Length: 211
Image 1 (cartoon, rainbow, N blue to C red):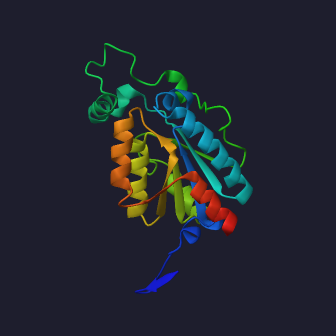
Image 2 (image 1 turned 135 degrees about the vertical axis):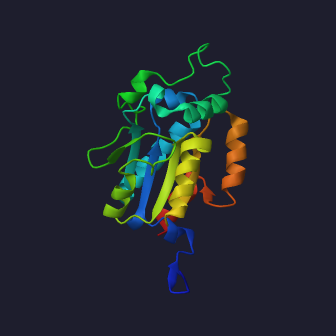
């Protein structure tokens, strides 16, 4: 712990990810979204293992699910962003949006929420905008967020930056985040690791076990 200017700054990684004040955010773990990731198999395997360990340690789990807004209501700028992200030039020419079943609260097998987990609706690529997310963080007195899911360059990035701005320690779980494209994933990681803690899930588990 570093004490400076009247603040207590968490110094060691084991302090940052202490289960007493840490939440694991599972972003966009619907089958359709994860299936689009170039690294979907690794993301699923690593996240299942991390979730199992998190439950053992009493880490709070927070799941996002699609909100009630459909793509026709979300607005032209957001649709343009999604077209650019997925490299689609003509929205009428291909099936490029996640299917409606993604809005039926389906989660990938082995990563379904338990009864005590938090499930919140999200509407844009940011857990804080127009959601109950921060209310839950304050209710459970969480200081640190571990971010897993897809896509790294949109929802994970947007959530991470607002989390930091709002005063939360933020950790990107490198082997539990995905993207439709490997080059986008690598570019996003390169940028984010200069700002956030970007670590593999094994490093988090090791910190928990040593604590």
